Length: 146
Image (cartoon, rainbow, N blue to C red; front, side, top):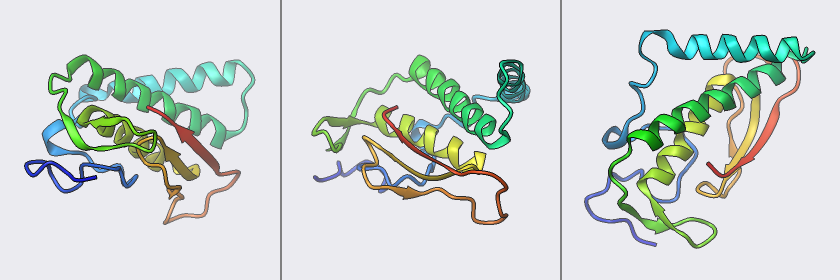
């Protein structure tokens, strides 16, 4: 498994850091507070359906946010180049695969209600638990294939 020489060093098997590749950034997705309105809408829907556990609501909302980021990535991605590595299933990885994986890791780290996560692109379990404050309520584990 070698990386292509012109690729940034963080491409390849993902480390779960959630770091954004500046070449393929999704950081400008949420201009003008759109993410806030998505979060509030999904929270209201969950509460209206009887979901009461705050950490569970935060977990679901963060996955919704990751999904929204991935949707924008997929709609705007024009560079379908290979990263030069293979994932745990043996598939050749696209930069797109890694950027979508990072979108999920970023969202779940920001949620602060997950303990462990792993994916097809990041096959080793990654500690994503909150580092600063003690969390009241349960922490969740996540396995995903973005």
